Image 1 (spheres, helix red, strand yellow):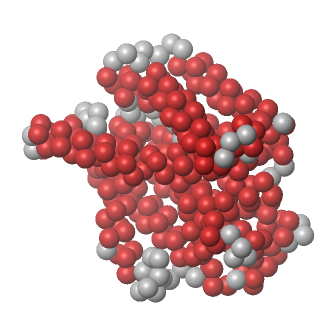
Image 2: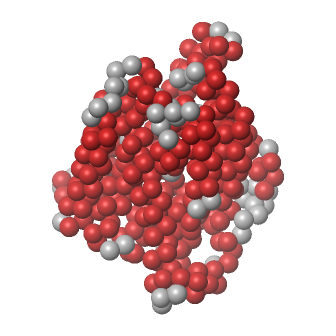
Image 3: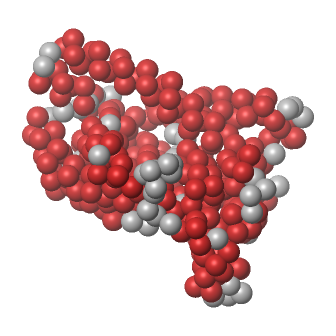
Length: 343
C-alpha cells in the first residue's frame, strides 16, 4: 500500500511540476510543439536525452543481459560517449544552422521530398514495430513485478501485462506526449532522468553496502570473487559482443543513434542556441560514463544473489533486485521514475 501511495504521489508531483513550468508557454506552433519553442538548456537536454536513452528496455534488458553475459556489454556505453562528442562538434552545428525540426527534413533539403517521406515512413514503422513494443513490455514487467497487477485485478500474468501496457504506456503516455509536446516531455524527463541517475546509482550501492557489511568496496570484492568471469570486457569471436565489433559495426550504430535518431537529436534541435545544444550532448556523454553502474552492474550483482536460477527468466532480475535492496517507500518512487521512461 505504501509503495503504491509513493508511486502515485511522485507521478502527480511530476505532472504538476510540468504543468506549472508550461502554463505560460505557447506550444501551438510547429517549433513550440515539436522543439519546445527552441528554449531548452543544456541541463534539460541532457536529462531528457538520458531518460530517452535509458528506458525500461535498458534497465530490464541490459541488466538481464549482464546477468547472463557480464560486463562484456559495456561496449555499448563506452562507444556512445565518442559518438556524442562527434554529434556535438560536427552534426548539431549543421542541423541548427539549417533550422531543422526533424531529421527527415534534412533529407528533403539534401535530396528531395520523396526521400524524406520514404525515410520518415520507414523510421516510423521501425519505431512502432521494434522499439516501442520492447519499451512497453519491459515497463509492464517492472510494474507487474513491483505491484503484482495481475493478482490485484485477479487476472493471469499475461493479461496483467497487457492491461499495464495499454493503460500506462499506451493511453497515459500518448495523452502526455500529444497534448504537451516536446517541452512537456523534456521537463518531466529532466526530473525523471536525474531521478533515474540517482536511484539507479543507489540500487547497486545499497546492494554492495549490504553484501560488504557496510563497506561497498568489500561488497564489490565479494561479487567479483564470486564470479570473476562476469567482469571480463573483452569479447571473444563467439561471444555476445565480439571485441572487433567495437571498431566496425558498433561505432557506426552509435553515430547514427546519437547524431541522426529523431527521438534523441530532437532534444538538441530544441536548444535555445548552439552552445546549449552542445552542452546538452557533452553533459550526456559525461553522464553516460556512470550508466554502466545503472544498467550493467546490478545484473552482475543479481547473479551474486540469485545464481543461475533466473537464467530462463532474466527480465525479472532487475525488478527483483529493486524489491530486495530498496526501502519500501523508495520502491514506489523509483517505479514512478521508471514509468516516466515509457513516456
